[in-house]
Length: 217
Length: 217
Image (cartoon, rainbow over all chains, first blue to last red; front, side):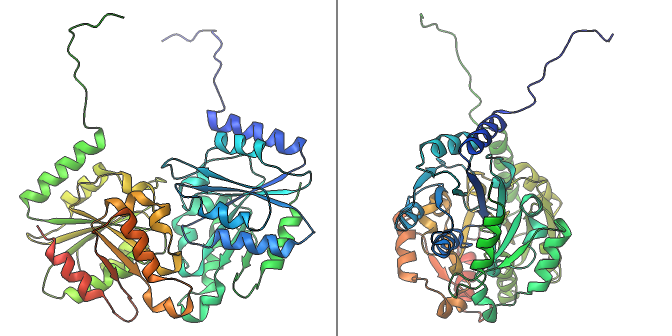
């Protein structure tokens, strides 16, 4: 087939990326920082959020978008902290997409300079594939899940800007090798900081909060 | 618009369902029973499988298809039990589809009357949506994940024929209410049996094996 001089315009950004870009613009204009919290079901994302908000006190204001397949349990828990929160239900889908986040974010009562945390659907695979316009993804891995998850679900651990090893208070009762897990994280993401956190004892929460403050826009 | 008498033929079964149907035919012809093990990353599916195989002894032969996004860790673990096993890698996808399972199953060295366990990708959402031709789905929920998962991920708990509450040896160290969790399971699936299992102590493994034998084709 002969080549021609007809110009080709390609839609370089898909639908999701367009909404993510609009969200980034909105966040910039409102001086907001958005974090995307990703981890397995029951890895302790909501509890971690509760700890962060309580630790923060007046140092930074938080607001939250809670992603779930069904129920409003998590948003109800966060609402008790007296911060702005909405529940995003995915209607069966296994991850949040940028459009839903965008509309919910615009309706959320955020204040300038505050941090919006999006708690994604409990899932180590799909949420990592969808840009929602966040400044950083945070991977939450409970020490009950085993050391090898960074190798088995490498996309999330490669994409994230911080890793939280949660439920460290359970370590005495588990065969979990922290050094081995840190090594697996480094194999897929050489420079990402890893925080060991226990919501029960409060260990590591301050260090994680300091990191959140350091990435603030 | 006027109605016409043109006949419409619709492809009622999608691609996945066609492969699942072929697998069911294959299983029937070879007198095999296939179970689809679904749970979060780190919920203890592989360890549970190891326990089942060891408990079974000569009572039934097992073979295994290990589903993962990446790595062959789990198939290597199962291979040490000296039973037929293959690793299915999804190339980034968050669930197993029927076609991949079908081809791997046909190559697996199964024997008549045996039980094939497919360990799906660690994920509570998507694997429940894809029929792979199995006789029964088994939902595995670690007690470290919290009681509310049956309500938050209802499709799996509605579709499954058995629920395993795993890692029960950790209960003394957790705030996990077994009765509450059983009640949540019943809210989405009134009659499904729930097994409390600890791979560490071996508690509940025999009861689960007896259930597996009872559903054998």
